[in-house]
Length: 449
Image (cartoon, rainbow, N blue to C red; front, side):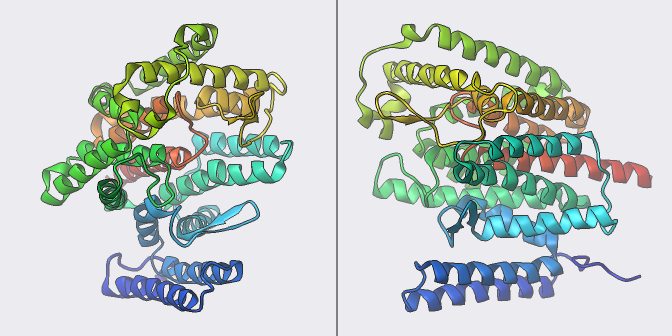
């Protein structure tokens, strides 16, 4: 029987050789461009991006799943290494590689080369993409909207399908381990940076809140899968927790302490009820916060506290933050009224009378204002149906329960930050895809018995 591309034995010396040569080609090209002083020039970066794409295409043809593992491990470094922006598209090893892997996977699923069963969740994901595309095309600034949609919709959906289709049999944990080790390495770099400059830092161009999202998610997977019991897992866990602390992310520090409770509820099969309660209560709380905005006013706060531990320990600063968030939500809901059905499209924020540009920092307001009621309903359907659908598997599969817990934590944090910007949408769809892969694997095993 003929073997299809990528059907070779994973982890074989030949596979490792292919990846080693591919990485060597990219590194050598970068070194030559840097020596010539052309690494910062657009032409040099385009050449490097093209060579990186070619190298990854060769690696993907040999082992598409192996490429996905490498990309997931590289995700934390994707903003600060080998990046170039062309129009609305950002090219770096992650966006190039995951788009290629997803294209390979979708082509295989469509042609029958890869076994894949299309389901209701796929329909919701594709309809959501179409709805957000429609809102993007009618945005005031289509270029800006397209750029944000590329990162907030396109790359997350590509991540979802690359993971869901290409993960096979016992390979699920390899994806999780790749993610954990990649984020742990990133956290270690952040810790070293913090020791040098003890302030809230951007780590390799990654905003602190995005770094915190990855570290908190990696801790949840590490503990949920029991990998912390191994020496390397324990070291990774220490790096992740300490790294998370250096981001001064109040939301994720609190949510990580609540994660065991969420995990326990999910393992008892109540994931669907949990997400419905969270979304209903949080929507009402968002509206209530807007209505009681004056209660949280404490006067002007020292903005230097934003970069120090005071943003975690000073209760007045917390209250001031809620006041600021309530202002954002109010503005966002006013913008939503301008186009309540299909939304206004993605944008960088609205300029206030004081000249400050603000975004909404709340996934309810974002979904409503960016995509209208149509996108809001589809987003809600996606997560609610996924949590209900994964309720039973989560009782037996710790990997599914861990992924649901991570998604839940990211969404709750998105009530005070964002779910459509930064790394959050990529992580959310990454874990959706990992759950899909885990349950598809379980169904295949059941059918083979």
